[in-house]
Image (spheres, rainbow, N blue to C red):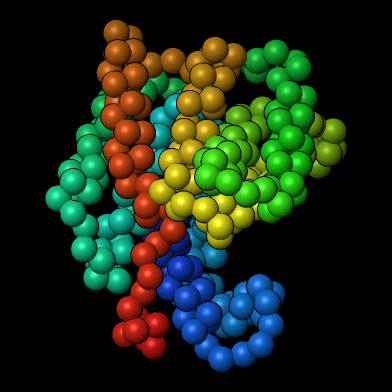
Length: 280
C-alpha cells in the first residue's frame, strides 16, 4: 500500500509543478503553437521535476500492482487529486473550502479502510483471452483519442475523460498480465502493447478533454473509468481478495475513497498560479 500512496503523492505533486511551469511558459513572449509552448516549459525546473516525479510514480505504481490488489491501487491513485489539492493550497496559496478539506479527510479515511482490509494480490492469470481484450480496448481508446479533437458538445469532456480513465485502467490490468520481463516474452505478450497504447491514448484523451471541456467533468469521468473496471477485473478474473471477513470494509473503503476523490475533481487541473509563483 505504501508504494501506491507514494505513487499518488508523486502524481499529485507533479500536476501542480507542471501546471505552474506550463502557465509561466504561456505567459512568456514568443511565437509558435503547442510545440513551442512545450519547449519553453521544459526549460523550467518545475516542469522537469514534475516529469521526474511522474516517472518515479509510474515505477511505484508498477511495484504496487505487483504486491496488492488492483482495487487498492486504483483507489490510491485516484487520491492523487487530494494530494494535488493540498499541494496547491500550500504552494499556490489556493484556498480550499471546508467541504474540500472534508473531502481530503474522507479520501484518507477510505484509504485507511482499504489498507486494513486489503489482502495480497491475486495469483490467477485470468482467461487467456484477457490479454487480447486489453489490447483491443487500448486500440479503441486510441481511436477515441484521435477522433476526440473533432467533437463538440457538452458531453465531450465526460466521454473523453471516461475514455482516459479506461486507458489508465488498461495500464493497471496489463501490468498484472505481464508475467515475465524477458525481452522475448515482452515482445510476444499482447499485454505489453496494451500497456503502451493504453497509457499513451489515455494521456492524449485527458489532454484533449481538459483543453476544451470542463476540468471537473473530465476528471470525474477519468476517476470512475480508472477505478471501477480494473477493480472488477482484479476480483473476478485475477484472484484479488480481501482479508478474511473484511470484504465489506474493503468495499466501503473503496467507495469512500473514490467519492472523496470525485469531490476534489476540479484539481484534475491545478489552479492557476499567481504572478509571484510564475516569476519565481
